Length: 153
Image 1 (cartoon, rainbow, N blue to C red):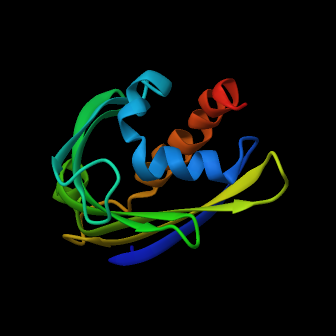
Image 2 (cartoon, one colour):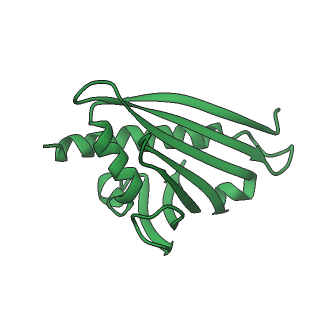
């Protein structure tokens, strides 16, 4: 098993790239209403909802277990990309490095692709590779599409 790696996948979405980017950039507080079966809460620990470098705490359910992630967000408005850097929480018990980027790429006027890139490094050789975390992130992005479509004007 590898000690580190990168996963990359594309998730096709029907909502616009701009709306998806805005939701993951600065509207995380809407996640519990939109995808409450996955995300139960998001709070700002340091900074504000709309700033590069803000630290947030996510409460989520993965594989039927309640978990927490403390992360720092990086914002790239020019490329419509949001990067989450794991700082603490359940995923960081297994990984030394957890960096996930959501890059929203317009495909048409009403559709886009989210290119998800997850860079990881395990804490120990015994730790499993984080493919389950990648599947969870893919589901989050895909499930948010329904909520964005309902609210898209």
